[in-house]
Length: 267
Image (cartoon, rainbow, N blue to C red):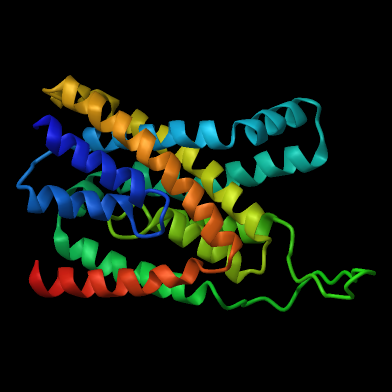
C-alpha cells in the first residue's frame, strides 16, 4: 500500500466512523475502487485510531465515570453495568460468526444492503416508539421534558443494534444512536453511551485479529493512515455531536439510501 492510499483510507475512516454512514462499508468500497486487498487487521488499526479520538474528546467524562464507579456511585455503576450488558450481543456475534463475516466482508453487495438498512434506521430515528415518557414540569417555561434516562431496556436494544453493525454498510453509530433516540432517551446520553460501547467492541475485535498482525507488510503506511484517522476523526466527531444536538441526525438516511442503491446497481 502506498502512503497516499493509506492517507485516503485514513480520511475515509476518520469521517465515516462518527458520521452515521458506516466506516467499514466505505473502507470496503474504497479498497474495491482502489484495487486494494488489505487484511481486516489494517481496518482494525484504523478503528484503533478512532478509539484514541474517543479518549481525547470524552476524557473528562471517562475519568469522571471511572472515579464514580470506584466510589460506587449508583449512576456510574449502573452505566458500567448497562455497558457490559450492551456489549454482549456483538461479542457473541463476533465470536461465533467471525469466519462467516470475514467471508462476506469485502462483498460490495453486502455493503449496499447494509447501507439501505442503515438508511431505514436513521429515518426512523426522528420518531419515538415509546409511550413511557418521563414528564417533568419546568416552572419557568412550563414545557414537558420527554427525555427518558438510560436504563436496561434502551441500552440493551442499543447493544443488539450494535451487533448488526459488525456487517459492512451497517453504521455502528447510526444504528446505536438511532435505536436510543427512538426510545426517547436523552440525546447527549445516547451519544455518549454509543461512543462508550465502541471501546469494548473495537478492543474485542482487535483481540480476535491480533494473530494476523504479521500480515501487515508496510508499517509506515499503517502509521500514516492511523494518524490521519485520528486528526480527521476528531473533527468529524465534533461535527456529529453538533448535528445530534440540533436534531438533524436523520438527514444522513438519504445519503445512505442513495449510496446503497448505487452500490447495488453498479458494483
